[in-house]
Length: 395
Image (cartoon, rainbow, N blue to C red):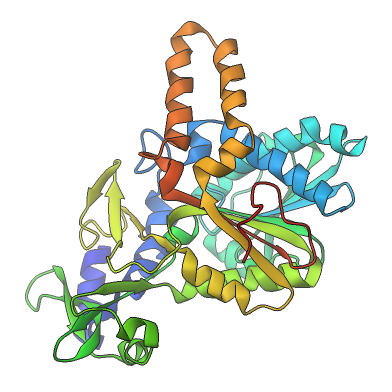
């Protein structure tokens, strides 16, 4: 049975679904879900991320990590935790950079380790090969769910890598640099609309009674009643539409609590805004083209913009930590010297590769591409110095 047929049957039996329910299940269904089965990253896939475009992105994150570790006066034992590591490209470039230039910061090679939070068998194998040179283990869904730490390997620069099915299973008893690049945009969102007669209603997903086809509808729900009671949303005009991601708020709260407990920092890099948006952003991509998210279920990447304003509210509720930013990706990379690095790279590559270097720089930093649309938010302990690049942006 296809995912579309499954959801139509489910809706006919139990009623319409929250948009967030559909988004989560379509992405994570073990047999037909997008990330366990069909996800494809890169030029030939459904979407491309900064690390897949150029290693310079990971080099910058690695260099920033060293600067932060030095600022915080932490010992030369650097631990990373990445959520949604994709093919492992970003972690490879971070570890390689820290392994190469780390001795200049500490006078000796730092000891490196990383926790990778991943559920996709396909991506686990790609990460293991990327970071450790080969794949020694066949990981099954049962193995993932039966073991908190389902895989351990030593790899690049003698770093110790451990894989976990969820953040709660990863260690929180030591400082860590938490990395989330284009992760939160895949977490479920619920959608709401303000109407003249009913006030705020929730946008739901329903199914046609006699054919496998999904469509949007609206209902008054417990979630929409809660929106009704919010003073900020009460001021919005009729016709306004908003999204909210409880899963993102809970995850960021967990990160902040870990940092408050054991130190370290988090870098959250994603597309979105630092203000209330009254437009809906839930959408689907296939082969780099935007498509209907209610069609081809499990074969498309589902995504929604990140609400950085909500994330900062969640961080502010955790005692002992502070949010810095968000600043634009362009600002972050420029302050870290990305222009100089690309100039160096341009002078080193053959002439027929120079256009690709220019394209990568523009794609990462141009306001019309990732530059302004992507934001970088940092979390540190309140007592830590303001991290490099975030001066004047703390809240």
